[in-house]
Length: 309
Image 1 (cartoon, one colour):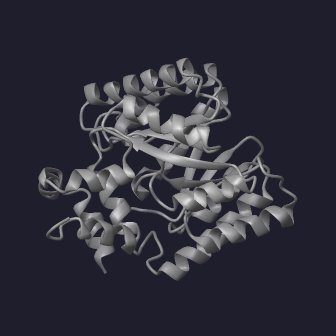
Image 2 (tube, helix red, strand yellow):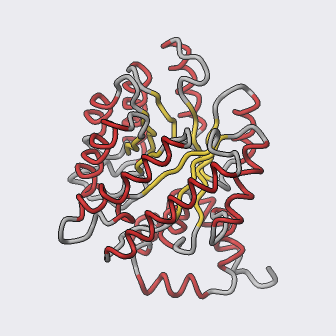
């Protein structure tokens, strides 16, 4: 029941101020966020890759409302990619971007501004031998995001996308993207969506996830299984066996700070396991969605407020 409340709070400026100013918040945030700037995030990347894991880095920020901030996001990603390459980490670390941080939501030409800003990021990623994945946000952004994907893949075919199984449209989108060279991360979805466009029942979301997963594994692309759900992980491994996919022709992805033992287990078993590592000062929206996704995350956060902790 608290999930919808937390998702609504993730876009509340008033709640942002309350949570960000609470003295106990910072230690809890550090469980899910790899620092406010690039230096600690880079330390995290080194530690994860040294233990056999792959990484995708997200410089946090979303819902940008001015062009200067969108350009600052672009510059932050360019610096990130140069730093990864300079540290010899680009082979095992890619980047994930939210187009709303690149200007997608700007009222005058937001789509074109986002494309203009993200294009040099995709170009630099390719130069350094790594890739970019376009994160998916709420349902109003899907058409624009997939359009940007099509434009980028003309010159940068390794550009990836994210699909969310709770949206009714996702099976059709999965069919369209299950083509040679396409990289698709499938997740369940973490935004508050209306019943007119998305499944509301968790069981329906799970069933939709399996249907889309099957489409991706049976296709010619590169599926990226974005889930912490043991059932979905097992089903993905069954689909890999059934479709004759060897490890390295698909991968698992999980969030930094969640099910870390399972991440190591999958990597040690020979699976390609990628950890989604967010960093940056604008952590609030991401953090609240993590609390909404799993009761265990929320309980962990609330326990930090208990006296004596």
